[in-house]
Length: 171
Ligand code: FEO
Image (cartoon, rainbow, N blue to C red; front, side, top):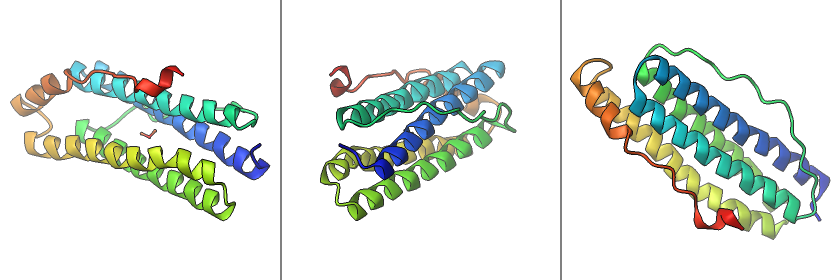
C-alpha cells in the first residue's frame, strides 16, 4: 500500500509526464506548420515515449494499491522563434523533469520506500539519455544553422527516428 503523501507525489508526476507528451505534440505541430517534417517526426516519437513514461507511473500506482487521479493538463506553448528555440526548450524541459524525478527519489529515501526507489532508478537512467538526445540536436542545430542546406539535411536525418516500445510495457 502506498502512503498518501507518495500517492499524491506520483499522481502529480504522472501529470508532468502527460504534460511532456502534450508539449512535444505541440512542438510537432509547430514543425509541421514550418514544413519541417523530420523535426516533427522526432517530436512525435518523443511524445509517444512520454506516454510510455505516463503508463509506467499509471501501472506502478495501481500495482501498489494506490488510486490514479487524472488532473488537468496545462496548455503548452504553441509558437517558437526558431528550430533552435524549440530544441533549447526540449533540453530545458528535460532538465526540469530530471529534477522532478530526483525529488521523488529523495521522497522515497526519506519515506524508506525501497520498492519506489527501485522503480525510480529506471527514470534516473532514462533522464540521462533524455537530456543527452535533446542536447545533441541543440548542438547539431548550432552547427547546421537555422536555415538553408544544413537545416534541410538535419530535417532528413531526424525523419529516421522511429518509435520502439520497450519490451516491458506490454505487461
Ligand atoms: Fe518522461 Fe522526457 O521525460
